[in-house]
Length: 255
Image 1 (cartoon, rainbow, N blue to C red):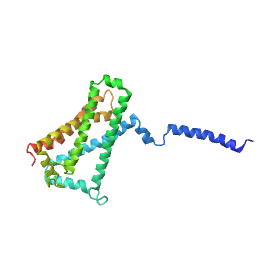
Image 2: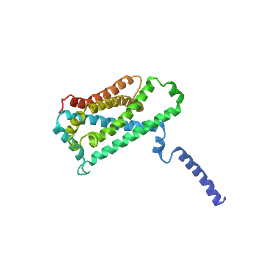
Image 3: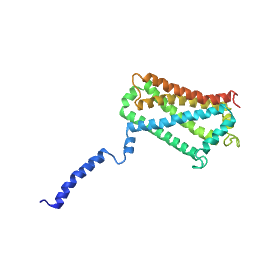
Image 4: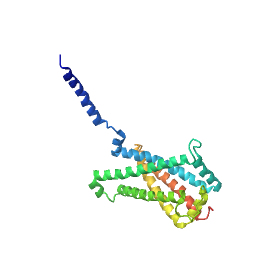
């Protein structure tokens, strides 16, 4: 009959070894471990990209209400701020959506930057030798359009959302979406900057939606041409929808 303490040590040893092996295979924080991989960052970009594309389309449809008339725009602005009442306070749901969108933007940009660095580190010579190829050019366009869009987003929030810049004292009126938009886009250089930013958005969307299809595994030899055309069509539709408002204001079609 063996010694009890020795028997216990022998019996405990396999369990401890197994536990260490399990910890090595299954990390204590699986989400953080997934984030540290290229696959994880691509998943984050795909998920946040879907959220942002849906927001862009919804925002474009909301902007097009300006073509209908001031009353519709006031009702739309009130709807955005009263949704969820009385469960949430006035404009509470709108701020929740804004915070979610800002979080998605931050995660999208962070994952994009880190993916680029991981790609450069993995194949520096290949990237250098293919510096002027179409794929690399598309990637560089994606990055620059993203930078321009980030700057435009900050300006847009300060200008048309908060009224902190661009308006004369007392010129920005709360809930007066129609009047604020007309006042803003009556200035030609504001309209030009907006159109340039929307062109960057169009390029970014065309490339981003196509990358989303690739990440989801929907591309193959038969579907690739159709999905490329679909990506471009969605981006072009968004561009036309957004620029129609400032162009109409500058042309005098909307007062």
